[in-house]
Length: 616
Image (cartoon, rainbow, N blue to C red; front, side, top):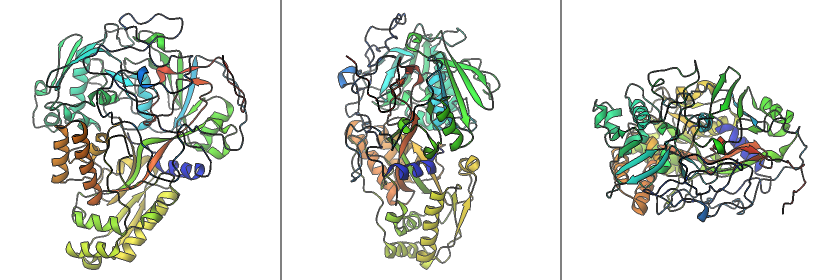
């Protein structure tokens, strides 16, 4: 997922760098569902009956019951993957937080008005055009909204981000581990009452893969037999894609090779179903989409989206809130005002920390996300890895990453089981000059002007200025720094009239693949237009591997990206939210900064700032 708040996160890192304990510890890895096992369903809220087809096993936590400690491994379903690549490991730095630390309020905290309606929640996000059609979406803010509207075969556990059974009540895996058969819940319905069918999944996925659509996440489907050829237009018959619905409640998916991480991938919103009435509709903003999630859209205006509880949702007994209002803030100051007034109980976008009257709600935690620059390699001479490598190793990396709380030498945040990759942190001007000379550009002669494209951010200006001055003074390259407004910036990264840009990417599920698949030559997310046969070979090899061997191959692919100057990592980005977890139940800081709203509820009592409530 792309976040448009990279520069803001940098400022917040500087703000919190001097606040002891300001960063919450990332969640420990918990297990996910085991293929072939009957899916355990979430338990209903206290006093309600379970869904008709829901097995009796309880979920780790229910609305209204806050766990006193993180759920143990015994509380979660068994893992589909022996290595469980999803546990974030803090990078080796003197500033790594102590395990178990939680955010602390800087200096003071004043109480805000109490909640007026405990069945209604107001959330504030930064103003942007919200794309409701998940086939076109790629922003993190949209992914959060989609936890309310859409639901796939699996969904995210609110604490561990491991896959939890959702629309699928059971599944089986073939002996060769390449064919998955899912059973759709008998009680799963769209909000208009129509039953959820396996065909709604098949048709949605085929629609997303349509080569005319160029869906951002279509390359995620490449692990499915025939999907890549279909989205690239090499085959035109959807029947050749390994997705079928032989029965109304049976969905069969054939993979190219075994993929133990498949359930984790299926949590992503791009694997959601689409109601048949919405399939050919290209503008989902004109009227509420017919969706199958715990909420649906009641009202959509320029200033807000109003969601109401889906009373036909299969797990409605779990959903405590009846209404959610998502408001857009024009800027960080307006977001702070929403919080200070008590109107909003969660700020999920830009916010001015200095103007908050109650800072006890500030939650900052490490996230599976990286802020990086990249060198676009679609045109010569920037397509030459020697030229890109020269640009990369000429940079004064310590200065470039100065002030960043979690400086990143690699693209992928360290996760359990993933081999350590040699990072990009060495400055070698002599070697950079040698590489340029070898490529035919001694002292930079013959190189065209290099354009660095930035947003109007002080931190982007600082880094861009360092890059420009280094490349001009040390390598003799003429550099132009170009500033583009925030709202247009990420659209312009698809153009071919610049060489260096930046992005902040959040992993869509806790696996290296979610970062590395973006750099494949035919990925719709490949803004760098990276095209490397060796990289393609490694990624193809990883698709037929499992366990440790797969992770080692993916690490080799990442090393290639770094050593050939495709990506210039800056920092591992934290998740930043303003939310009072003493009053809002079911909201947990986690590695993906995705918070499934079905688990939210308000506590009966909210303690005053500085007052500890004792229970017995």
